[in-house]
Image 1 (tube, rainbow, N blue to C red):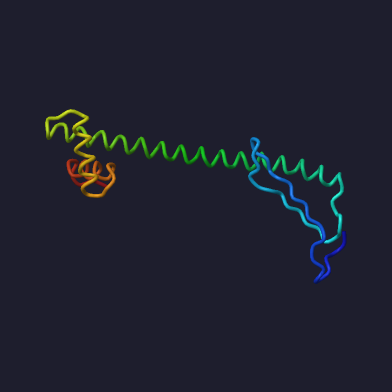
Image 2 (image 1 turned 90 degrees about the vertical axis):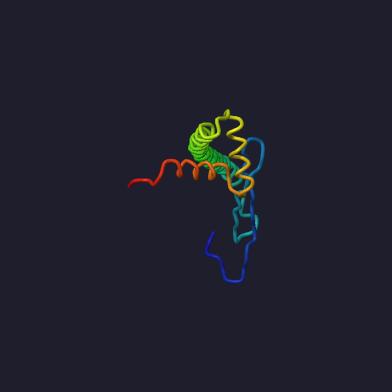
Length: 133
């Protein structure tokens, strides 16, 4: 195929979709400086490569979504523990049930424009006292 000459530009292009589960999520784009550079054999090779690239892309997306879900689950577990501790504190202080304790935390959350988790953490921190290093 030789070296491109300045000012000559591109003379051929080939785009092949990256199919993932019956959807196209991207494309493999190949360019050439010569006209009609892509014969049937080149198209077949590039289609095969595109299929492998689509699998790699799909795996990367799956890994990313799984990692995000795991992070969210860890955060949810930590948040739940703090909220449950705060509910227990409210229940002991107010002599109420868990539903009423959560309603109180929710009301404080709304009134102070803070997340329930942050309100709960502040309450737990207040009761627990200063943290030791």
